[in-house]
Image 1 (spheres, rainbow, N blue to C red):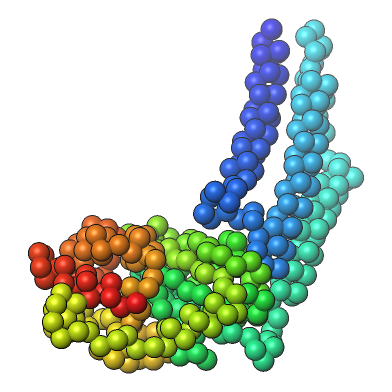
Image 2 (cartoon, protein in one colour):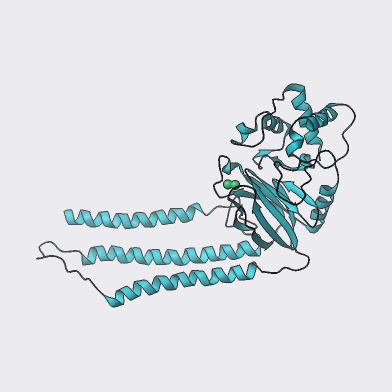
Length: 351
Ligand code: CUA
């Protein structure tokens, strides 16, 4: 009876390991209802990654099933029988067996490595066509800055790319190690201080996609999100044209005018650029302390893309950034009442 209990326990732990592996695989099976779904590729790069993922998962599952069956069989077939005399037989050395469990895993690793390296070589070329669009990604604690050196555009939290055109991202960090992750469009790459990492891709499906920092980078690591808009060429050109426009001069009177004065006289202008109003003017280097707000009102989100861009949220953010995003570098300015509302009105007017 004891022997049977022992066998059942062994069998249960094998099945438990199998169940855990299955549960882990299932947890990754997100549909598009999940904003950071890694299994709905929209570019050749992410399609290749998904293809390799499924191949590895299917083959590994088959291997797991075979190993589990062999283990369960071994438990029942080779255990000692009641009444059997002496110690069960043991073996200290078997050259063929040792060769087998060295060579087979090595072959499995080769089978994973070859398609992976081939996909990297195919999707990440070392030179680019002349019309490649260069996007510089600068990671900050805790928001993302995006610059288009050839277009003269810079923005934060949200950025746009055109479909069917090679995009070359160069990524640098302003402080600590972050990780740029936009699963549907471009996979993931670490963003490391003092080093320039890259991703090359061609986006194929217009839409709005989510991104997120995926390397722990301090208090608000989880609040370091972004959005990428994949546009048709016409929509992208329209966006670029709009980004290059200087916002209209604020009116002489009213809340927007009052807000513009507050912006210019409060510490806001030290860290934030509004073209034509305030400028850090460190163009195309990474020295900004806060996002460029030139077209703030036309963005859908703010504060590392964690809040919808509504007047209420902008007011809450200005009142106490640290509450919305713990550890945020932006100080609370102590504004309230009309002053706060005027500043919000001005920021939202920056379309
Ligand atoms: Cu940046 Cu985590």
